[in-house]
Length: 239
Ligand code: MN3
Image (cartoon, rainbow, N blue to C red; front, side):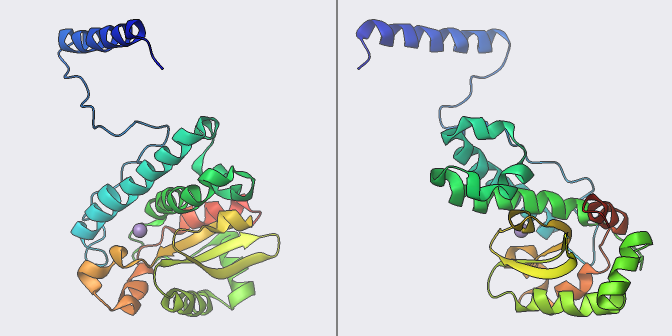
């Protein structure tokens, strides 16, 4: 129960804050504004049309501004229930899912995974003009898959085989490189693996341009891999 006196005090605090906002020339935030949280949508590090014709500008715009933004909002909503989690990185949270309070675990798997996966994906993409992996990542690919075509064949198969929404990955752990797929927004980080390549095969990632032709979208992906970024990821896991 709040007393009338407390209520009046609360009202006067709100009124004073609104008055300050007016004095500073800013509108007070609308009551319906979503709560701001510790996690932010990172800006795309390139223009939305940077990957035409492989990924169209409208898809990039919606994918980042709407879909990724929704995962960030969902993650902030979840950590509002357990504020101590807000000081940790999203990768840390997704990597430690099993240790998180059960009340937020599913939300962090979905929304934290969505935020981590998309943040990774934007950094992975770059028009590579036919570029190929180099250095120790190239050697590891050679050893495990017999070369880039072998990697592509297995990765494409994994990406094509995702039933419904999910991701295909090249990831690395103590046993070296592996191809895997995850459903929904699950991340290799949850299994203790470091993502090196990741492809979003949710329909929202390709449907405007490719409709049901996921195979064409997967083929286009190989033109958009920033191999330096991938190599830096692999190096984190000792490759
Ligand atoms: Mn997506």
